[in-house]
Image 1 (cartoon, rainbow, N blue to C red):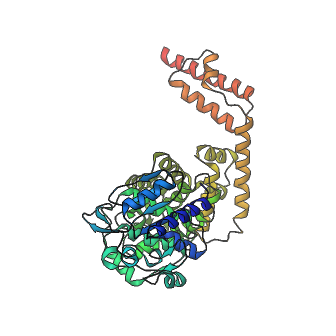
Image 2 (cartoon, helix red, strand yellow):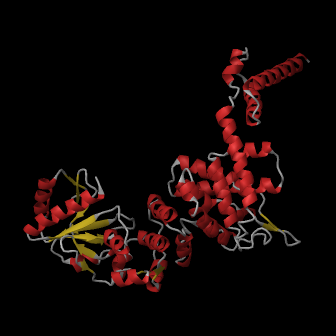
Length: 462
């Protein structure tokens, strides 16, 4: 359903509710985004002043009513993107995010309904029919000043997820978190949150913020990295060679790389997985970094160690398997695009690197973000980038135009599947990467297979 159709349905609902003696308001992020000049995808409305059965009868007149939890009083209409709720009172009953007892209270008034919201900028309401803004807690002022401020200390502290929401709003909107809200966030315990909810808030920052690093920096200020983001916290203060990393320690570098990746994410085949790769690309440094007696700093093997460390993080927040495999592959290879040109490597090395990558194009984007994070002259990087892109074109050309010798070809030539197959196919794959035409590659592969077979027979006869 189109955005305007959803707004029109909200208006029709508001007219009928008004005729029954009630009022309908836009609430939450919809009002905030409207005042900021954005078109919000989420249209949340709240119905005041009528009984639930009256609302249900009206919804039945307008379309096919659906309900999500009788105690929450949340409805929608089939084929419309509208979240329709009634005001409710909430009482915390446990440590987890959903441990609340809710009671519908359609006559509580706008101030009591809004006080349960997280931040003042999300506590504003707008009359659907008149357009009047209801703002009991100074949300418009905070919106104008770029401030994220909690509405109520007691209700805010009941939901630990709001710590993450404060950080992601700061990242997305470029706002400052009020000092009293930061202080409150420092006292809250995030341990009982579900990993999926942590991931959801982090993903919003990674995909929507111009500078996602703000999300992690705010969590650092709140001293809230320790449980869910311990792999990132470990980067703080880890030294790096000033020759290659004039920007500072591993944490500072990672934050710069994350923001650099954000400027490139629209080009990535998998933007979220790409951003996670940027965030976690150096997470192996805390366990591999050493300072030599001569003062030289090295992190040999951090890309290998980092794959397992990143995997632990992604499992904790319940990242799907495909994303995990992508990120681990990117971490393992992330140094090579910048290392091979410095080593004056040959074409074969580039082709192998690209062939090993789950997404060659994204790997080169990550290497560019990595260079951005080193605060080096990006004009000097242009020649390296040209070389990498030329190698990528060559790889894609081989992929599209050159047929690879397969196991089926070996079977047709009389070879049986066995222990030697993988070695023979690895040899044929190298010929394919080198761009050897199929007929020539087949001859060379069969010759290599015969050589292996003869060597094996000779060894067995001894």
